[in-house]
Length: 460
Image (cartoon, rainbow, N blue to C red; front, side, top):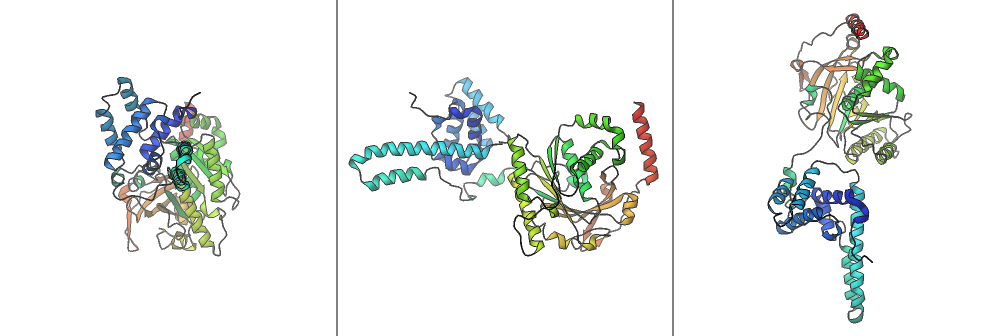
């Protein structure tokens, strides 16, 4: 009968994931180091990797960074065979910037396994103590075993975690599709971040969210788009128009061409429709968890739009409910480690404002304090006739704000383009400098260009 116990029944992927978590997660390493017997690991190269990591922690009372581990593996494996050296170094290279889908499961399962083994050892030892030791001594042995591997994350340790604050932050931003905007917000909206589009009714909030989602799909990301106002098929058609470039009114005439174009896209798009005020943030979390169980990892989450979600708990004032909803959306971004875009309406003063500044959105802004990036879209009646408008960067945690960009916005083809950066306006103390923006083509000229484009397409 086999007396030795190990992680064999959990498989290679589980054990490699466990060792990766020990390296990447300092608090978890503190916790499991108390109960992990290195021999629980079946594979020799994993035992060598964890042994070197634990030796460094014991000697220097500090968790090693990647550069340190790399140096140790290059210089301190002299006693190991060439095969083990190669396997250990190859494993370390493989786990660099590799995300784990089941980290919580691996942590919980490994800790449970190791703590049970420690308790088993203590109970066997207690059998011997029964003959000559007091009850208090036996109780102490059992209680000490129960304490091992318990929660040890008491927060960020200023000294022990010194290296952590000098590691580069990996935001993995997803582009907005506008180079000028990306340049001031670190490449786009990053993981764990909440972005909010603010605009008056009829200004094109949903169109902007489709534009942002389409850019992510074209980058190969998995986009989960929640619609609380429009049908899922309507949103899908807007994606068709945005990605392929055909007008919404002409999509039926180009069905085959659209399918051929979108079939070559690496990204994935899931559109989930809920009736207005029927879904809460808990509904969204449950749906996202179901997707994850089926192997669909969200790369970007879009909620169209936050104001139409049902609050998890009813409160006296509506503004408090809205604040709570946006806080919960920020939590979803953190829990699923990806950006979340949503939209919100301005107050009445923003209806025909040329530029929607902080003053104009103050009433709506109180529910967006947790947001990382906020921009408003303003379009006057004249702008809608000329397919123009303005984007105002109201809040930007990763760069400057108070910047206005003139835009070209044609909702008939879901096309939104930031005009040249030379035309930027800076808002300062409520004052707006004069600018000259390029005049877009008139509707008639655009129609003529589209006809030529379709004629050329049919000839090919």
